[in-house]
Length: 132
Length: 390
Image (cartoon, chains in turn brown, purple):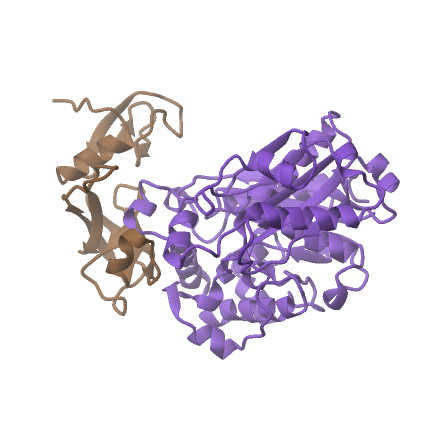
């Protein structure tokens, strides 16, 4: 059955809660939108369908955060990066399960999900990357 | 032959930059305004200044919004219309653009543009949180990506793609600290060595403490008028002959390239085109060195060198005072300081001083044409302006 959720950022995170990495695919030109948007950035169409993306990708760049905002201070130092997913879109996020000395640009990673929801707005889970 | 003047700067003011304990942002703006008014005795501020455009990034720092009217009041120029512009660290670069529009529209003969930020009374984690508001919330801030983190992501990508080194980035810091010592209004009046820069504590690898600009309090302003009226106010105006402004996605991750700021490049191209100038015509430049890698990327985006050769340009000393194209003679954001909303017009202030022979110890010989480059966030906004001695 076709998924009828709205093409919004909140829907993206609702799917993440279910362990799914979802993007909006433009039915007119095929562009994949991550995050989903109301209008296609390539052809301005508003006709989309949800597709589940493959969770694998390659690390484009990374950094190790030592000075963090109050919400993340207890986690320092932590790794974050930008990943090019196999299906095309880029996705930023935390990288877990690898030491800063071992991390490399170009390494294979995959998306995993922390399905716990914070008690304050926004009521979203977080996804993260691990080596694959 | 350069392009015709869009507007003329007839005066400028800058508060002391630094940790200005016990002073509110509005009081710093009043200091900057006072200097601009005193520098221009032919100007009768409440009578002549017809509008204010002022950059201010965040209400969070001082729990104070509604900044336009507040600053017009504290500058002593009520009841003129005052408009706050917000584009993160490019807030006052955009204010300058708006001031140019206001004059070119024919509505006003004289306007004031400027900017302010009061930051140092907040803790570093708090400032880190407030600055991160200039980045994408749902995919960057939500995942713990800080502002230094975003530029660190660019730095890692630049190092990987072009072989740029941590040493080359540190050389930008050493240069800008040297220049800051020559600027009595700079926040940090301290030379640093390459070893000190490289061994300072890591903020977001590969960026270390000395790769990062300063958390600073400060304010800046300029008085703009129609070029044909400039001589009524001063014998030494500086003409703005080029202006460019472009935007990009707020999320760094959504961009095709992580090693260049497309908005910076496009704003530069537009400014060079309106000014009918080339990069080689620039005698002096203030670029947005919020992090050392940002200055290296700016060299490339502004065509001071080829793509990927920004690190080399810094290493060869070509951007030092006395070099081919001196960059950040004021000390830059790195050493003069970066009160975010004030930065765009503070850069213009330095170019104004250089082109009117008022830059004292750091004065360049025969500087005729200068450039300022102001970036908001991780590059979602950029403005570039080109100035000529009047």
